[in-house]
Length: 116
Length: 115
Image 1 (tube, each protein chain N blue to C red):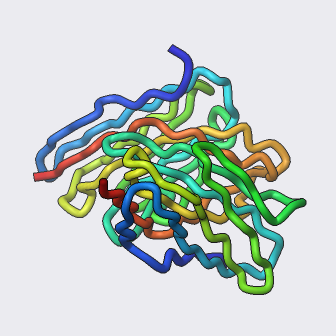
Image 2 (tube, each protein chain N blue to C red):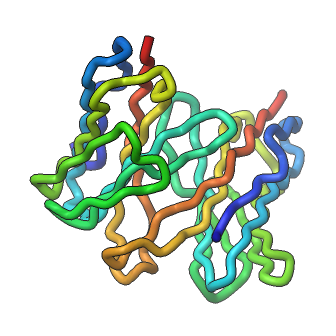
């Protein structure tokens, strides 16, 4: 069964420093991978997604992620974070359902806290 | 307004009461989902729907009922609320065509407290 593991529940970092949020997945088939961000008291917003093609995926707000099939990882990175990046980040993998659609299996989330 | 909206945003109810959470989307997406978010569990799928009058169970369906008489609405009902159903509930929609377009668009969530 597919699953997602986010290795860090919290990541504290100072403003303008680089950050990496780690995500590993388990799947026996081809996968589609996603990173979502959740700001306080809001829903989830898509940051980026990997469906196929280039293993380096660029998303919104300066984030990028690299799909590594051999290590079954999809780590999220940003070279220089801002205070406004403080949020909860979720990694997700798609799983096929009936009726020709997929569902998302989410990790437990990583809280990114950016300090001035 | 375009998008996906949930109501109410906050709800407190008593154990044993029936409560319905509403979800409305304006994109005419075929697929809609209900997730619950709990600390330490991330988001877990409760129910999903592929079209009007087509629904199916997700990972944690017990104690919940859904319906989808119209494409744009996907209400979630807790038939007899329990404290374990205290959670934040998210509705999402997706075009979902062909299994590759699985980008889900989420509502702002409903924070439900069962006392």
